[in-house]
Image (cartoon, rainbow, N blue to C red; front, side):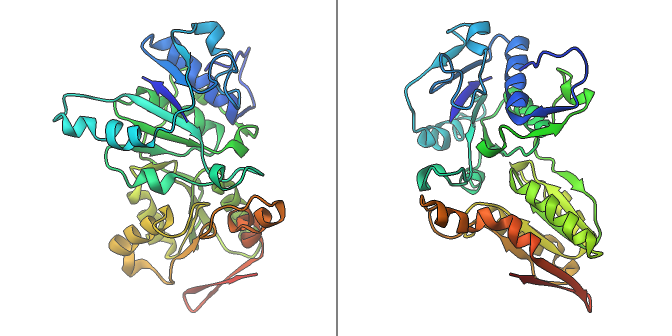
Amino acid sequence: MLGIVRGRVARGGVNASMTVRDALNSALDEEMSADPKVFVMGEEVGEYQGAYKISKGLLEKYGPERVVDTPITEAIDHIINSAAKSNYMSAGQISVPIVFRGPNGAAAGVGAQHSQCYAAWFGACPGLKVLAPYSSEDARGLLKAAIRDPDPVVFLENELLYGESFPVSAEVLDSSFCLPIGKAKIEREGKDVTITAFSKMVGYALKAAEILAKEGISAEVINLRSIRPLDRSSINASVRKTNRLITVEEGFPQHGVGAEICACVVEESFEYLDAPVERIAGADVPMPYAANLEREWPSHRVQHSFVYTNVKVERSKITFLLF
């Protein structure tokens, strides 16, 4: 995970699409250009240009004083006990404007220690803001917001999304573009069921909505974007409209993000629910290294679970048949 204390894509006109990798790189570049106090430090961020080339070109452009290679650092103690708590413990006298960004969630063929979701871990800690982008728009706008924020932000990327391209508008490509922290995005409007997701799972949720639409079921898909603060108002407003909720994440089910969403809906919108909440999550075991077992791990089967999910509205109740 890299630390950013405090990119621009060369273009002659408006690009039709942008990869998540380029969105992150351009956001870094533009924020470093705009504010000389912003610098990047972390393992392999300089000479190697980042393990996934997110910091490509930054060392050459800004020099070794602002792009600093460091040894490998296991930083969770510093994130939880120093960054998250310093403002509170100093009675507001010390701010910690730092972004901890890096890959999060299941990858492919890298075993249990490199395939786990930390959203719920960091999301449980007061003093931190936790963001999880899905698209290039998310990556660019949220990273800019994180860098500009006066508080510590944990920025959770999915390495399987780095090479994916998403359409971007001229507004997104503008150097002033920034997304609000703590605000979810309605990726698809619907009236029969709400599906919440974040990071890579948003793509699966959108595919599920397309399949459900063919069966006459209108699903509303919410891209959370922000894990902490969580956009509880948007989630509850959607559930009060659709009366049904499915949460999707690739993390462990116990004490997960989906569990927190379930709790907030039960607390604030229980009387609007016409059916029990469904949670889709990863298996409650470490990710296997063996390829055949990895393929069977539920987070990799979320798409298939949706594909073979029949959702039928009967007597104001929604029934889920998972095969």
